[in-house]
Amino acid sequence: MNPYLLEFELNERRRIMIAEADRRRLVNLYNARYPRKTDKLFLALADFLIDFGEALRRRHAKPQVVAGDFCRE
Image 1 (tube, rainbow, N blue to C red):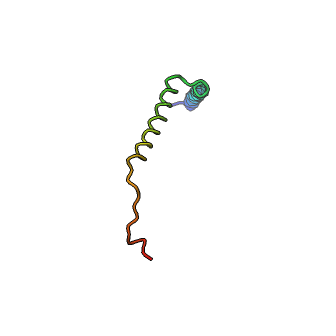
Image 2: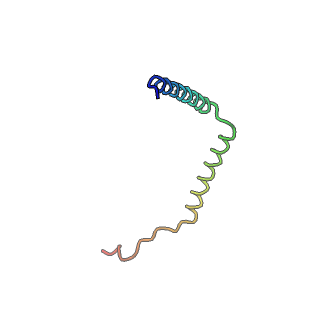
Image 3: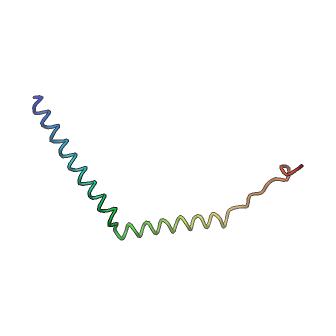
């Protein structure tokens, strides 16, 4: 293949990839500044489930018991 055409094709692909990366960066910046309501809902639900799971773990965990052999003097 002609080296000039190959170089032209590589430059064109690079330009397209950079444009797509810039577009995705701008979309991510927008989404970070203005989160959707569903994202807020899922985040609140996740926080609730984590707190609920930790409360269940504390409630149903067996207390730590030290065996009598280790307490001799």
